[in-house]
Amino acid sequence: MNIVLGITGGIAAYKAPDIVRRLRERGAEVQIVMTASAEEFVTGTALQAVSGKPIRSNLWDKEAEAAMSHIELARWADVVLIAPATAEVMARIVSGGAPDLLTTICLATEAPIALAPAMNHVMWNNPATQANREVLEERGIHIIGPGIGSQACGEEGAGRMLEPDLIAITVFNLTGGKGEGLLEGRKVVVTAGPTREAIDPVRYITNRSSGKMGYAVATAAAAQGADVVLISGPVSLAEPPGLEVIKVESAMDMHAATHEAIDAAHIFIAAAAVADYRPVAIVEQKIKKKSESMSLELTRCPDILASVADLDAAPFTVGFAAETENLIKHARGKLEKKKLDMIVANRVGRDCGFDRDDNAVTVLWSDGEKSFPTSSKVELAHDVIELVAEHFFAKRGSETQSRLTVISNND
Image: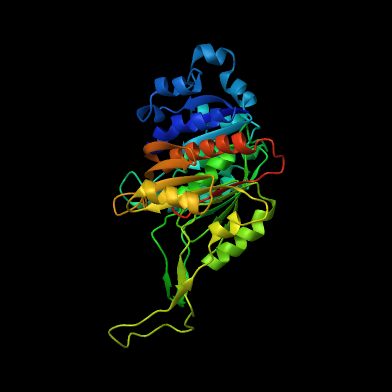
């Protein structure tokens, strides 16, 4: 796939090299076109290094325009992607303005155009920006995101550019191409996030899982060519584009959804932090504060890990162990007790694991282990998926109907 990547003047431009890398990993040729403002945030030297092509930026480059550069690129592109896309460039495209090379290409191309917005949440929610978004979508331009979360200004809200992986997946799906990947043609079912076990209509039992690791694993599997179904507990994350997302609430809901989807799946990644216990009975009305103490009777939730591992068609199982102490000891014990093929161990606590964008893990199997130092959960998800695929194919590569099952019980 030939992709023109337009970079505009937003702080999220620092993610552009990673976007280029994700696109090229999937076999794309990437030609970068920068606006003058983008050059204030990221250097052309760095972008040329990752793209392998000279950077285009000047509509008045006499040498390039002698060959009608804007027409050449407009015809060359299979997709024009602008990431980050500022409120300004959205407005220019809506008005049909073409004061620079990037917007001129947008007017001259017949290829699909995709914008990944990135701006302050107040700017994104401004009626003018939302009106421009509606016009762009009506004209068939694809809007990727934005996500919700912390922003460079220190505030929270919608307007954060989606992660490079999600952007890359969406771009490839625009033309029906997925690129090359280790899991090409495989169906992967992923569970992610926490579950909520109701006490009464307004209260529930839950845990600190944000779902970030599970969503990252689902995205990494899709980046390797898999068809992914994501079964998600309640999270405040943007849905990864290009994936089928099934929303659930409780452990019972997740158990049912998993077994409904698992039958045709080659891979099962249960990255959800499923509650171990739930109230025996759900009170129909809000419980009133009447005494100094109260008792709550709990019962075990279904063990999704065990139920999948016990299926007749023995799956390749990889567990996740979230521990606050004796990490490797507890993880290896779980590996052996549950008869898993691999297990991914990570320490959790107030200062690590949950509610963060980074993590560190150690992957163990019967006769070996490999540690990955602290890095983003997105990067770790790629590392884990690649390692799991390597061991799966080494062990079961000749089984044409085999299934790879990746099991996790933590964020």
